Length: 340
Image (cartoon, rainbow, N blue to C red; front, side, top):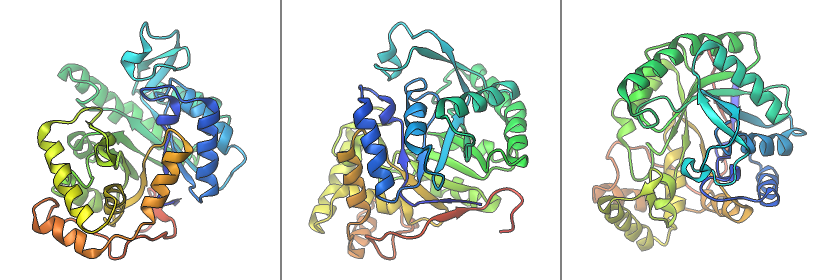
C-alpha cells in the first residue's frame, strides 16, 4: 500500500519548464514543501532532461518518509537538442530523449532514474505520455502503445512483484488512452493531467467509473489546467481558446460572489472525488508553492458549488467537498494483490 498526501508536488517546473529555474529556487521550493508536510513528489526523466530528478533526489534523499514517483518511456541520450526551447526546456541538461516503451527500455529507464535521483528505491513508476497527444502519427502511436502494454508492462509488473517498486500506472493528458490502458493489465494508479478540473469533468463519464471497477486510483496533475485557472491564459500548454476563457470568467464571477479565490476552488474540487488520492500542482518557486498551500486550506462555502452547478458550469454529478479548507490524513493506494 502506498499512502499519498492529498497535496503533493509536481516537479516539472523545477526542471525548468518553459523558463529557467535556478538551483537555489528549486531547492528552496522543495524544502518549503517538506516543511509544510508534503510527502509526495512526482518527477520524470523528461523534466529538464534529468534536471528535475537530480534536484528531487538531492532534496529528498535524507527523507525516507517521502513518496517519489517518476516515469518511463523516454531514455536520455547524450547531446542537447539543437534548440531545447522548442521542447519546453530552455535550460535543460545536455541530453535529449529517445522514446522506448519496451521491456529493456523500461528496465534501463528505471535504473537510470535511480542513479539520477541518487536513491535506492522508487515508489511509483508511470508510463509517460503514451497516446496521440504526444504521438500524433497513428502508426507511431499504435507501435508505442503496443510496446508499453506488452514488454513495458511486463517489466513494470516484474519490478512490482519483486518489491522494487510499490505501484505502477500511466502518466498522461488523455482520457482515451487511459480507457484503453485499463484493458491491458492490472494498474494501481493513473496520473491524469488536466482532464479532471474545475473546467473539465469528462472523466466522470467513462474513465472514473472504469477505474473504480478495476481498483485503479487517480492522481490529478495540472489542477489549474496549465495556468488558466490560476490567472494565466494557457490551457493544455497553449493559448486558451476564447470559449474556455469565457467559461473561466463565468466561474471566476461566481467565486468572486462568494469571496473565494478561484484557484482555491480549483484545488479543492479535484480532491472531492473519492477515487482521487492526491493533487500535484507544480511550483516554480517557494512563493507559488506557499500560495497553493494557502488555497488548499481556504474555506470554500457549499453555496459556491451549488451555484456553479445551477449555472451549468460544473457537471451535475460531480462530487464536491463536504467541507472545505481542510488538511486530511494521507490517502492509501491499494496495490495489486491487496484486498479491497
